[in-house]
Image (cartoon, rainbow, N blue to C red; front, side):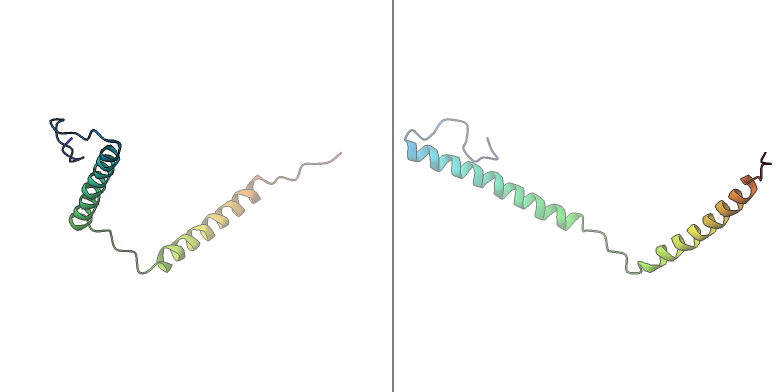
Length: 86
């Protein structure tokens, strides 16, 4: 009730226009509180900085993949056995 700014029911709208206006005030109150909470959160918890050197991890990954390719080639050669035909 406090967030929607409508109180505890001691005063309430009785006409159709008053109820529509009251509903608008309730949604606006929730929206304002949500906006203030998000602003406060962004001030207290800033977003992490983006990584500036994005090429370094890719180079490491490429060298690791090349090493794995070499190992797989060696394993294939060990597993390949010429079976006699006949």
